[in-house]
Length: 168
Image (cartoon, rainbow, N blue to C red; front, side):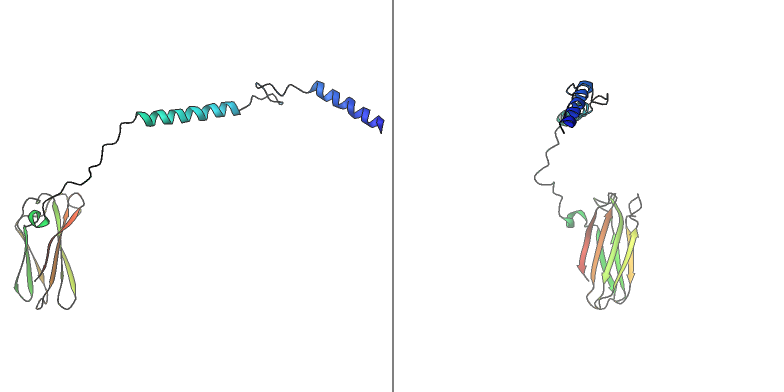
C-alpha cells in the first residue's frame, strides 16, 4: 500500500510541475483570455451611457392642473335645431356657426314613444370637408308621442359631442 502512495505522490508532483499558472488573469488553463472582465466593462459602459443620455434629455413640460375650458356646449353648438311639423316627420336643420369648419358628420338618433330607434347620418366621419351649411335632414316615422332626439357631431379631429338632446 505504501508503494501505491508513493506512486500517487510522484504523479501528483509531476502534475503540479506541468500545470500552467491558473492565477494569472491574462489566460485560463486552456489558453483563452477570460471574458468576465470584458463583459463587466461593457455592462458598466452601457449603464453609464444610458444614465448620461437620460440626464441630457430636456425636462418634460409641466401639465396644467386644470384643462382649458370651453364655453358651454349650448353656446358652441347652437346652430343645430329640430322641428316636428307633423306626427310623421322630424326636420333637423344645421345653420352653421362657430364650429362649422370642424364638424364633418351629424349623427341623428331618434327613439319614438314605442321604443323603436332610427339613426341617420349627415356627412361622413371619413370626410375631410365639413358638412354643408343650411342643410336640412328629415326623419320619417310614427312620432305621435314624445320622442327622444339626440344629435351628435363628429369633428375632423376625431372628437365628438352631443349638440342636441331633446324630447319632441
